[in-house]
Image 1 (cartoon, one colour):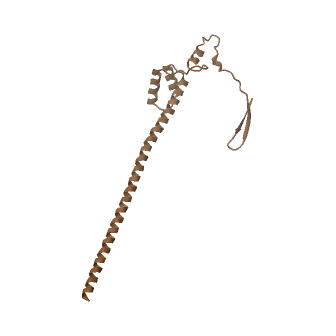
Image 2 (tube, one colour):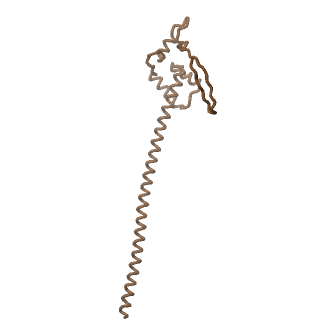
Image 3 (tube, one colour):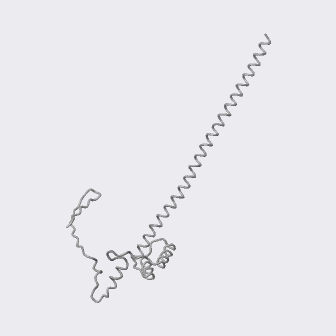
Length: 172
């Protein structure tokens, strides 16, 4: 017996005693009149203890891939059953293959989206750095022009003042 404690979001708790019976699935045993086909098929599909997992044939994979590429959505139960029948698989095998394929596809899409966004980000970051550099260059040019203008004005005034001083000294 095992006691399990459940804690709910509202803070309340509940305990429950559970008993587990360890027994193999009932269909594993050959029934009277059964030729053992289920047990053999179960072991071929990787269900037997210590058995290797059965791989799909190339034709099965091609057909599953083709169906996946035509419709990435989850298959309806009748479509799944029909595809499984055509390929000689269990509907559960088809469902799991599609589930795994969708997970791999989403993962690959995320990687591609990330790479694309990273490229845009890097390009924008380079553009920002370029604009910062251009801003510094333009600011330096403006300062240089102002300095030159002020210098010219001061030089012009000093020339005028010098010429006035020269005139005054000659007049005296």
